[in-house]
Image (cartoon, rainbow, N blue to C red; front, side, top):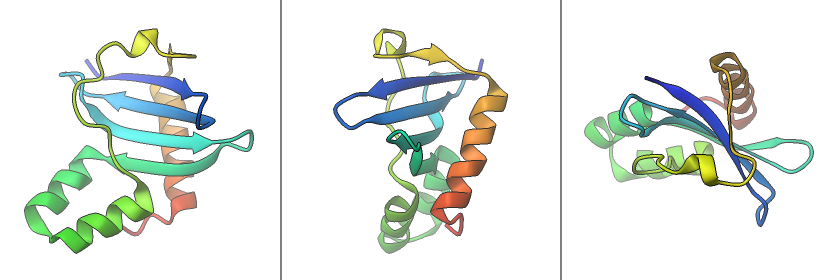
Length: 107
């Protein structure tokens, strides 16, 4: 079952939002920083896998520079992280669209 949740990294003043797939891996990730919630990442596993299989390292570096780096591994234990909470699919979708627009969704 897909889940959507958020955590907070106080050291970096960074909110991390995840869409985790049925196996608990990050399918999409959004990161926003500061009180103005400035988007700094909006990465997708499907896009990363496509680049890995069909592009070169330069394309992958360009993607990561523009849209950030996706978390690797299962998202186990997120419930114990600071400010952790489940969010709705709709909330995640709204954040995703806003972040991709702000980061220049041309990857």
